[in-house]
Structures are given as C-alpha cells and as structure tokens.
Image 1 (cartoon, rainbow, N blue to C red):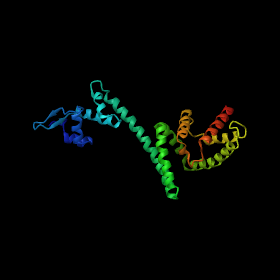
Image 2: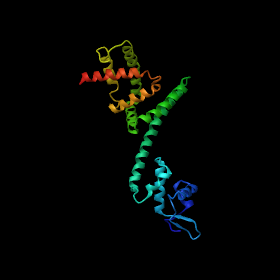
Image 3: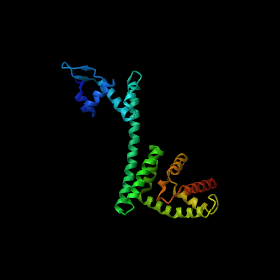
Image 4: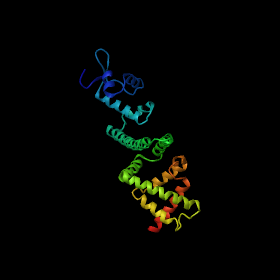
Length: 245
C-alpha cells in the first residue's frame, strides 16, 4: 500500500468516523474506494479524503445525505469555498458558546445565593437563551455581550441600580395616563438615554426585541418590564431624542 492510500479502518480512525458509516456512504454512491489491495481490501486515496470531508461538512451544515450527491459532482464548489462556509459556521457557533458561557456565569452567581426562586430563574434563563438565539443573529448577540463586558462588574451594578430607580418612575407615569412625549416624562427619558448610551443603538435590533417580547411576553417576567411599558418607553425616548436633535 502506498503512503497516500488508506484502508477503511485507517480512514475511519483518522477521520473520526466509523467503518460502518464509510460502508453506508459507499452504498449510497457518495464515496467509493479508489482501489483495492491485492487481498481485495478497500483502499482510499487523498482525493477520497477530500470527498469524505465534503460529505461530513455538508452533514454538519444540516444537508441530508440524500441531497449531498449532486454537491460532489464536477460542478461542486471549490474546497476553499466549502472551508470558508465551515469557518463562518464555526465562528457563529463559537459566539453562541461564548454567550452561553456568560449566561452560565450569571446563573452560577444566582445559584450561590440560593433561594426558592432559583428553579424559576433557571427556567426563564433557558427559555430566554433559546429565544434570543432565534430572534437575533450571532453578531447581534456578540454586540450585546461586548457592551455588557465593557461596563465591567461595577458598571453593571450601577446600571441595575439606576434601572431600579427609572423603571418604577416610568411605570408610575404610564399608569396615571401621562403623555410619553410630554414634559413630565422627558427627564426620565433623558436619564434612560444616558443610562443606555453604551448599548448597541440599532433600530433593527430594537425592532427584533419588540417583536420578540410581543410574541413571548413571559420573557419579561421578573425584569420589571411589560410590553406596555416597553412601548411607553420607546415613545418617550424617541420624543426626547427628537427634541435633542
């Protein structure tokens, strides 16, 4: 056997797949060995290695095995293009994992404090994580995380303390029927603008957030927000920014 040929066992071991899977790919017509040894054993070449890489890459991207065949023919995209897609996918997954790590650290802090509300908090967190990943892109989630990281622990503590002051005051104005664009609400709106100055200021992200909370208001549980308060706040901030311009 030449150095650039692999038995089915070698290929399975070195690629991290199984002999059974390689036989299955052969049965489906996706990957056939380029040769046979004198004893009749399958031998795979370097070209076969590239085909196997494509099969595994497309599977990882969610392409069904039955749909992979046409992607392996003469018109298949260059290997460099496929690798670029894999890199993009891996980077997106890395960002998701980084966001998950940050959330787990916050849960760890809450768990250390204990209390009967921990299970409820965990359930909310799990639902929120899936919802945010569904509504926001990996880049947008990373921007949110970067803004929070830039604040540091002390900045986050100050942010939460100011939120605890502003939200009840804004809610009181809303419940008594105040005009969100009026002069009584404007000082609170200006304080809110200052508080969130370091946050991503992106209308598309705000739109996604409003749609997410409208579709899943349960995500707001325990936050101090309601969908009505979010709408009131949006109008107040928009009016205050308009007068600032």
